[in-house]
Length: 209
Image (cartoon, rainbow, N blue to C red):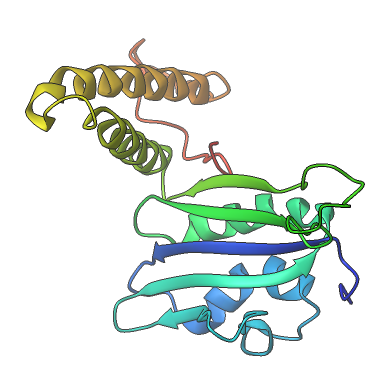
């Protein structure tokens, strides 16, 4: 698949901690939505970034870590690859983390005063992956706390923000309880089971925005 005239440069960035037993073959299969879209025949063939100063897609088997700092040319249809990517990485990940996907308008030149098209069509997508919904929400919570604390520390001492963090934790606790309840709705009740909900049906969302 050729994207030489594609309207976007797309940058995928994130570090995903993998389960200890995950090997290169499993990772190559999980990342197929990326390297296949780029027109490669394998992960090794497609791991290099459009820019030489970026490390691209790397697998560190000693640290059980997937590192992505990878740019390719593409179109809006690249978004269709993201659901499968997240679902695949959910199966291999050891903990929750975020993946950032940035779309840069390749045709836009902010130094061109005669640009007739107006503003650039840049966009940003934040995805979360993890082995369980709870791990995904923990990653969401950690990122939100970091963002809120960094913003509020311009005006308040960090020691004063404990109440703010506690309220964020309450919001995520409520969201997790609601998700757990929703996963129970379609679960068959075993004979003789009581009325108390269990710990989930084993189903996982592809990703949570």
